Amino acid sequence: MQDQLARISRSPFGPSEEEVRANLAGEASADAALSLHDAEIAAGGPPEGLGPEAPRDLTAAAFFDVDNTMVQGASIVHFARGLAARKYFKTSDLVDVAWKQVKFRVTGKENSTDMAAGREKALAFIAGRPTAELAALGEEIYDEIIADKIWPGTRALAQMHLDAGQQVWLVTATPVELAQVIAKRLGLTGALGTVAESVDGKFTGRLVGDILHGLGKAHAVRTLAIREGLNLKRCTAYSDSHNDVPMLSLVGTAVAINPDSDLREVAKNRSWEIRDFRTGRKAAKIGVPTALALGAAGGAVAAAITRRREH
Image (cartoon, rainbow, N blue to C red):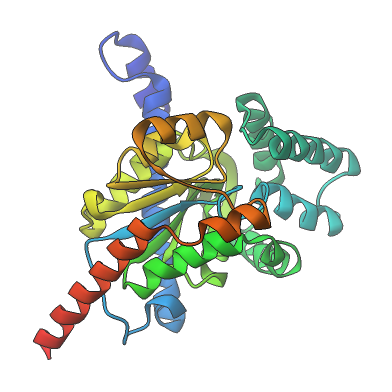
C-alpha cells in the first residue's frame, strides 16, 4: 500500500492519497464482510431474518449506518466502556472517550480530529492481540450495553427489508469484527466496517487503507453491490450524518435517520425521507415511511411470484 501511495504523491493527475486510502478501505471492508458472512452461514446457517423459506429479492438491499442511526450514540464508545470494565483501558483513556461521546451526542457530528486520535489509541490497544479475542469481547459487551441502545424505529425499518427478502448490511467506521457482532445479534446479513490488518490471526496495529468513513463507505457499498449482483437504484441507505452523503447518493432511495443539521438540509433539498426517532413524540408521528414500505412490499411480492414459478 505504501508503494501505491508513494506513486500517487508523485503524480499530479491521479486520485489523492485520501481517495486511495478510502478505496483501499472500502475494498478491504467488502472482502471482510463477505468472508465473515460466509463463515456465519457455514457455522450455523443463514441469519434469522433471511431464512431458507423467506422470499428472496436478489437485486435489492438496505445499508444502515450504525452510530446514532441504528445505535444510540457511538458504538465504539460503548465497546470501550465494556473494555474499561475489564481493565483493558486506563481510567484516563475512558474519560477521554466519554468526552468525545458527549460532543457527539450534543452536536450529532463526527470530528475528524477525534476520529484520528481514537484510531491511534485503538490500533495501539489491539496490536498483537488475537482477532478472535476482539470478536468474543464484542459478543459480551453487546449483550451488556449495546442491546438496550438499539433504536426500535430503525430496527423496524431493517426488519421491513428483511421481510421483503432483501439483504441488510451495516456500514460503519467501527471495526468490522465488532460491527459483525451487532449485525449477527440483529439477524442482519452482515456488516461493512473498518478493517485492521492481521497476520496469523493477530492484529498488526495497522489499518488496511483507513477508517471506513465518507468516501470509504461509498466505495465499500459499491464494491459489495458489484460482487453480490445488486442494483444500486433498487437499494436503500440510511444515515444520520452529513459525512455519509457519498453513500446516500449512491442508491435509489436515501433516508436521513436522526439527522444532523447539515444532513437535514441536504435531505430537504434532495427530497430524501427524514425520520427522527430521538423523541417518542416524533417517532409516534412518523412511523414507517410509506414509500419505503410500498417499495419493500413490491419487492416481496415480486420475489414470491418468482419463487412460485420456480416451484
